[in-house]
Image (cartoon, helix red, strand yellow):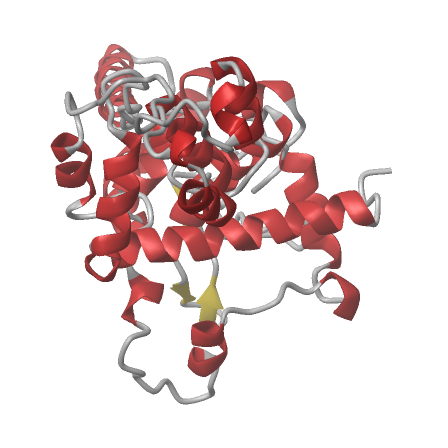
Length: 335
């Protein structure tokens, strides 16, 4: 995160609205003069002349973690609240602002890394989860009725819920969580068969980290590339720009030099376009509310949870993002 000005075609929506911008992917490089590592960012979106962009006021994070934060922020505030993240980032070292750590993270936080069986999900990509799309595909076009239907009750039934209108029954259900609804179904035959719309709302409320259920916001190009790839794309462009600046500043104005400048300018345009083409967002297909069997989806996720380490990691990161926003709101860090 930096406070510079990326090119217009590179910017995400929040970068056009606030005072913060994403710089690039961190790539520690050995400083040949000082003999130590120097943090650099590729692509150099904040246009630092040296590319030595990681300064004291900046904040670093994993690209995939930031994608989860963006969606957690939209879910909570309705927009990507970068100020909340940065405000917490400036004070995160103080005890009252530190996040509670997942037990797997605590086990991994050792001076010497030790592998703990079962904690592999910490390294799983939370945005691209193998097997998840297969589950989504398997629960399409399998919906049942969207009405609350019950088993036939006797005329003398003492079940008071059987006498209520559908709208009131649904209002009651929407106030309950899954556990309470399960108990209610055991106590009243009226709620034996429940509508898909209820499970859609339960999915949004209880599994908000399954963002495919409620948003189609695309994934940033940062999650589809690496610092090494961006360095490879940017190095020839930087070289050409350096040569072009030198020719324009120190050239004598001969026809040969003018032709050389024209050649370098054309090469700059070609390389810049190639780099621009790499800035592509990855679409996220939102689940169709009417065609998805939300009951079955929740069941499949539960049954195959052990096969989805990326989704497990996404939930962990999502909970951390919620903690960040809770701290920001509780301590009014923005005010």
